[in-house]
Image (tube, rainbow, N blue to C red; front, side):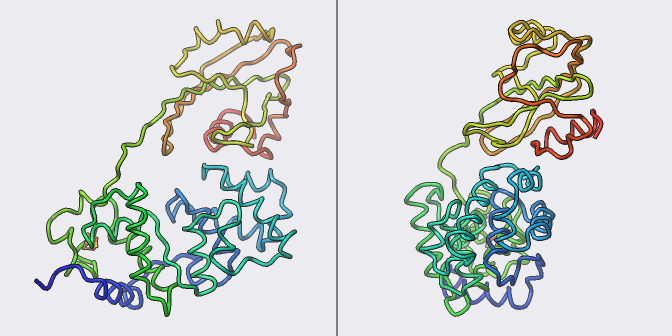
Length: 357
Ligand code: SF4
């Protein structure tokens, strides 16, 4: 049989395709600066390239160097991050920028192992920076790479197990074109993103089709294999927008949860949706001596994150009296100045459409 998957064929075809046909243009491609490569890789984790693109451009514009990012106010960086989710990425990025600036005199580490020691940088990002910025022979292994390798070589070991990770990582390094690891890594990432896509791969345009295991046997929709079904946690957020004299009560989210360090109005979370009638009866109103002239349900918004589904309901509460009891650690902010505060994207859209900034 001459259509058996072949490592030499794989690398040769892939790099040739990259040199002649791959026309995926993104501003961070061929970027030599480790800072910008790092920025793009952090933004693109859990985010599609087109969605991440405006964020990358905004960050580069606001913070052109790692020193600029290190000097940024947390608030400003979080506001630019609004909408990307997984805010820990932004928090780690700020910590790492400050570490590089203050402890390493603004110089990015230049080896895979030293990159790996930085906060928020795992094997994938370390490989990307080592290879794209410094030409070191490290293969990137992410969702795109799992997909291309498992389909082409017919690997049905689940990629989210220790065994699977070892198999894919070893194979990725064996396939790496060490003379130009950057081009090879870019090629496999782009092929996974544009041709060997999750839904319907474009096998007719694929340079690997001739010897592809999954194409040959009609198995593209069964590969790659994931071991566990994602468990989705359902959460119901009820935001009470407490308004007093054109000010809104907000506080900073903390704890190890989504949207950490961003601001939000008063939140009542439950595992079930609560309607207005029941909400009014909840102990919060009594305990905090909340007196209002009107309270209205103002719509809801659903969003799906990797491991959770959140239904957010908004209630505008116009207070007739400023609550006497101290409301946690929050503050009253003029509604006209809410645009200066970093909120989760869900809230930004609602506030923009329903309040005044
Ligand atoms: S032939 Fe199809 S399944 Fe195989 S690597 Fe190419 S796009 Fe993916």
